[in-house]
Image (cartoon, one colour):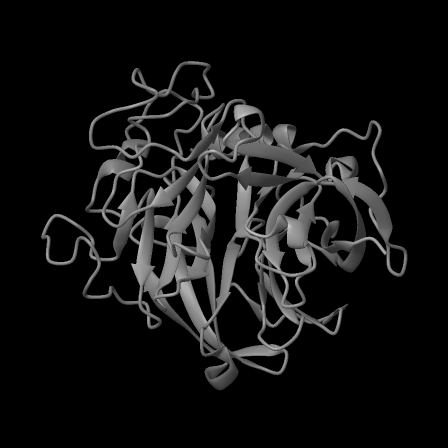
Length: 403
């Protein structure tokens, strides 16, 4: 099992290693970079550097202060554009290089100061994903308490999931990966549990703000199902965003060798993994003998072959880029880009195309781990050089129109 974990990490690092050829240096403090992106000139500025694997960002209301998780286990605070030297909170021992993922602030943060983080938890059954809630007091997270532990126990240290997003219904949505320690083989005995409703593996969960299952969840009352489950049949997704008009939840899921997908999540639906996938296992064999469709399984809104390893997702609603309003922005890891996606209404497709995919920021050769819209309408991205390197080479960058 340990050898398998090492091989997976080595494979991820190999995919994650950016090429230095033809790259533009990242901006430095006080030295922004102006580049062409998405059909216009933008200015990219450094907000914070020296981060160790920044994973997720969450803006605090009323300004541009933000929280950043480092996958090595530290919750960081950026105040007035400056990274606070000491972490606000750290994942309890034993820790590791990839143990802290999502962060979300309560809809009533201005009144209660509550912050949620998703992280690895170690126990007698192995490792799983847990949810901790605390109160931000100045630059420290205090009264931190574990309020939910997923039933996703496995020996694997990867595929934890841990994406977090509060919805317009004031419920907290949390992704859990398929926890597949046999990921390098064709053996699907672990990943197939994404189809089982008696476990949290390979699911998106819907929770109250105290970590319990809401009474209107789709599987509440079924003896063969976990009440926290919102959707199932997912592999390793993190990015979630609610459509600003339909209020539906859109979700990014990373495939193996091919088969990344963008889904619109509907309560109680099955999104197919691993019964349906456009990807191949790392052995080179097809994941599924029915890669595109099976009855009772939802189709993706978009998919990618080959992969870009999409990490994060927003709908842009700000005023700084009026021509980008309503566009989707997707951070890509192996794709090393911020992808702008334009989805057109029927009859509006340019050249007969219903969608347009525009790669941006490829010049930097970075892996884009998270993308968020700031309260100022600018676009912020968290970058890393390689997966779980343990090195302080991660950044938060701000993207705005060039003057």
